[in-house]
Image 1 (tube, rainbow, N blue to C red):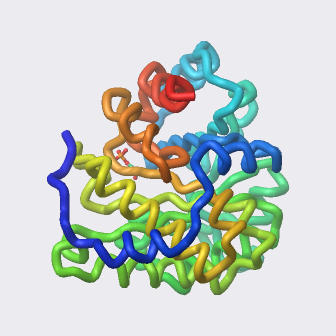
Image 2 (cartoon, rainbow, N blue to C red):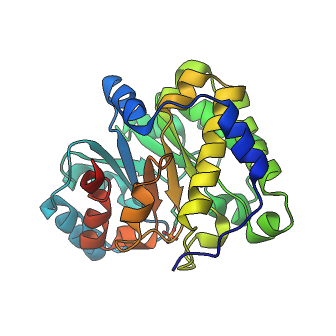
Length: 287
Ligand SMILES: O=C(CO)COP(=O)(O)O
């Protein structure tokens, strides 16, 4: 089910219109030329899984057929991470769901970026809304985490997104801009190629209410325009902006076809192997 269309955002469309954007096809060629998958699918397993369940999920993913043009990264819990990394076949990669903000040491319960790098974990998700709300991670902390993880050679899936209250009260663009600004403050231009941005409206996460194609495209275009204006136009052209929030194997094709949607970050549906494989094939059908 798609959420009802909001009419909030002429400002963004005007802003987006001022920035000469590369076409989707041109953008994807540039992304491929620098060696990345032109479309990106993340599977965020959150705090789920037993050894048996994870073993079966890895088996299902390994048996699936996925296009070589798509970069696919699954993110198990810390305890399952090494097991999944060792048993999942290429092209699947793995990501941690978080890491500590600085060098490891006396920080009970934490896992540092250098430990992940040492284990050969290429990616980390940072700033997920569940960590922002449940663990009180603010914009500045998320920016600092991005900076440290990137400095240790990790690639980052940086999450942003507004709550329903922020959207309905007209504060959504300020919230999104502040989240982007904090990330940009801590990221060198060169490091943006090691980062993807995941737009995950909080009201769509785990609710079954997915953003409408208009809502998703509007925010993705805004994010690209913001990065073009405040970071660098070339960075914006090749930045992969993912949508997350109730993506499933039924709605993924419509969303994958949107101009500024370069992939997904999938929660619940990434725990079901066959569904996730279908989502991994959603963009391929449009190429
Ligand atoms: O939070 C998400 C991915 O990080 C989205 O979760 P759902 O796909 O379960 O809505």
